Amino acid sequence: MANPKRRHAKARTRKRRATWTLTVQNTVECPQCHEPRLPHRVCGSCGYYKGRRVLEVKAE
Image (tube, rainbow, N blue to C red; front, side, top):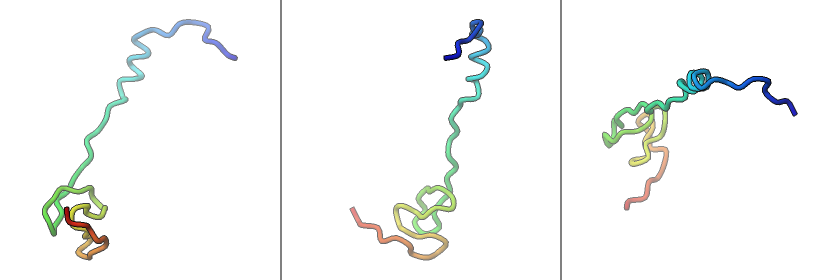
């Protein structure tokens, strides 16, 4: 197996890992029930997508 010839500096490693950030997902308001949902996805609370009922959602 290949082994590194020289040790990597901490700054080099940390500079590489500096871009490993998480981003918050964008949400939009559902036009039917006004709950937040992901864009271009079926609403999980009412089951509507583009004004049509796509899923039957069970009431809790």
